[in-house]
Image 1: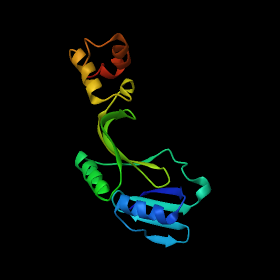
Image 2: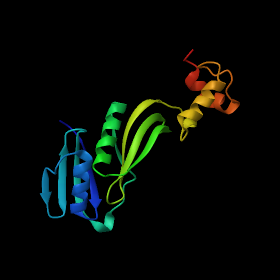
Image 3: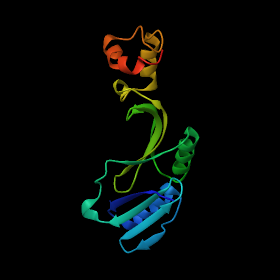
Image 4: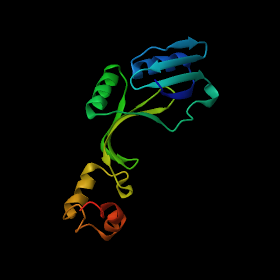
Amino acid sequence: MSRIQLALNVDDIDTAVEFYSTLFDTEPAKRRPGYANFAVENPPVKLVLFENPTATGTLNHVGVERVSMEEVEAEANRLEAAGLSLDVEGDVVCCYARQDKHWVTGPDGQRWENYVVLADAQPELEGKSSAEVAAVDRANTGCCGGGASAEVAESTADSTAGCC
């Protein structure tokens, strides 16, 4: 099976191994001084950890796209039961998609995202909640948006032209 490899610099290999063992519910496949790797089956990923205190915290974030909300919720429950703190973002627009997600922060500051894509979204929706999106939808008379503001109507004209 092919899988993505993520190589991370960590401050303390023991603390990092403990965290990632909990996060992925698996033990390292290989452990050496200052080094560990995980062959995670679900989701398929090869995670490699290098103890390198001078280069920690260099990632923006990493994440796992789940296929269902049930999977996101199951992971949230498992991680909280293991004592990890979650930052939950329900039904948000991010990366041009409506998502339900939660974040957990590793011992070296890397933010891990567990999420499911609920629907595609337009750029003008970035950062808005589902309540804000619903307010715009209520102002419209249908999918082609008879009652939307001129700004929203202009920005969605190309994407809604084929929907009706």
